[in-house]
Image 1: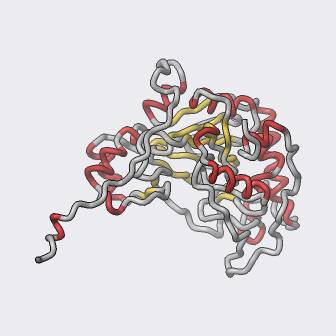
Image 2: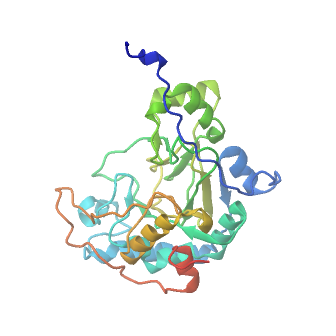
Length: 340
């Protein structure tokens, strides 16, 4: 008997993960949660009092200067070059050197206004947080080329609905010309339609990341009328966005002299994390490691520390934070180390 034609073979149906419950559907128009629901992002004004936010900014700068190079001068753009900085990723973030567990990073994550915002999103204060990175982006650097846009979503096509809400704790001004988050407002509402009609389900991956090429973005722009929008925020504001919202981090324009300083932090309900995820999260925590933007999934145990451009380990790398946080009951629960 001849084998069946390829066209007649049914592809396996991808396993779609349903949306966890949240509080957005009933949020009134006057509530910032309605912005998150309708536009895919929101700005919570004054989540951290300005003076405390400026204090975290200074701590971040002290951390950056703690690697033994006195040539770095925040007032002198000529010193804003790679040789005066620890190793950054390709998107201007610091994720090695145990920075995710520096005291100032945890103090910012523990801010009541930040935690309360995510508690209002998810309808619970039993939350866990990502061990995410620090971003310090110097404007108009002379030694690196501008990176342009890199539109993406941080959610797998195998998930439906809102599974993750990301956050930026603003420690610097994010004006129209300053570096910061760029979103495609409302794109989260059409992502499933796009994936279902314009992509091949057999190519979908479980990794919570999907990059968009220019011709793919054109569908959202031309068919849905969605254009990129620079999110503006002040020092101490919290920016939140649905991981299905198309976004990227923009660098400063030539008109800006603001040193962008932000902490990435995302919170999810503790109950969403599996026992295996919590086990891995605990291991990362005790090794002072970092994670992805996701608090309750995608826990990657990274084996490599800071790597210099020549491929060798950075001798300045650290296995422990410069300043350890106080291991309070609240911190350990947010870390996923201690159960609620």
